[in-house]
Amino acid sequence: MPSTLMKRILVIDDEEWLREMVRQALQQKGYEVIEAEDGVAGVEKARRELPDLVLCDVNMEKMDGYLTLSALRQEPSAAAVPFILMTGSADNAGMRQGMELGADDYLPKPFTLDALYAAVETRLKKAQVVRQEAEKKLTDLRNSISLMLPHELRTPLNGILAYGEILATGAESLPASEIAEMGQTIHDSGKQLERLIENFLIFAQIELLGTDAQKIGALRLNQTDSPARLIEERARKQARAANRLEDLGLNLADLPMPISEEYLAKIVDELVQNAFKFSERGSAVRVALSDGPNGVALSVADRGRGFSTEHITRIGAYMQFDRKMQEQQGLGLGLVIAKRLAELHGGTLTIQSERGTATTVTLKLPKVVAT
Image (cartoon, rainbow, N blue to C red; front, top):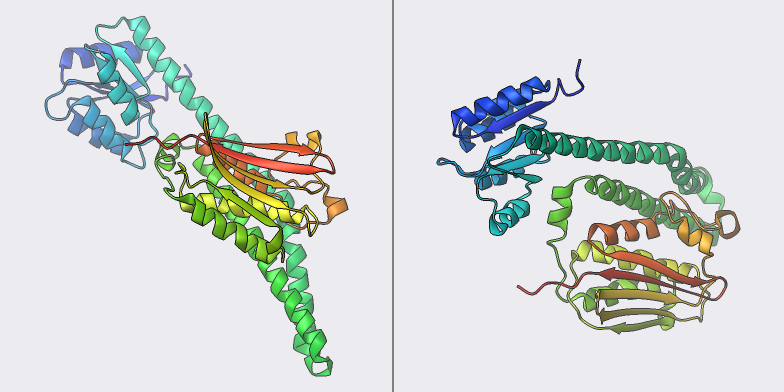
């Protein structure tokens, strides 16, 4: 049985003879073929039949190929289906319009059977690779969660349960100072647990989002027009939490950034919190936002212990730096979340560090294009 036998292809064209020709050619290769005589019928059949690939003519009367493509990209069940436009006038403007709407390829008319087979096989193979990569990411995510999450959640939970039991069973025999100390420990453990869960959920969310090209495209349409105020507020919040407001230095040019306020706030929180966590009281933590030839740069610099080259290259999910030595609890996801968010927005996150001296983490994002 050919490997292509179970692949289902939807052919949308208002010319019956062309549909017949394409159907016979693809059936000879073992594909199952569905036909639709116009865009309206094609969208309905795609929604109902869920094909593995769509071949669609551009010039049709009821609904042309561009409108058909746009309609399918709005359908959650069919949005990721590979889509090839067939056209007798593949000019640059038309090709650009199709690509902007989410077309995967163009097949100029008239085409040979070899060109048809090559276009179909290339798109199906690419779709298979994308699916395999997504499945691998999900498998890695499940494995990481099953190995690390129970331990990381149990640590603060143990403190909450232990001190909660003492207070529930013997509070009347304890001095007020010890009760207050236990209450503070329970509160701190609860906040730690809250951050663990929040980071886990955000990491899972962005890993899944990273497998969907349509969602990535939509994500990159967001922007923060005046980020300086937000960056200052989040940086000061982290400085106050570390009781080091006097160590914070700010130099912020108010430049628009192609990222939502929510995700920008998350990146600032993680980078500034790490800077205070891994540096000593009295040493400066500098946060800067500046313009550059290749984009907008947000940098956070500290005079702490720094990272080794090995640590920098090993930034990964559910991993911490010098865990046994530092005894810093947490999923170790802060830098990873910031790095993945940078990549999803078309940017980078880099670390420059001298062991035992200083560290600068820099987020670079493309400039916002004026409209």
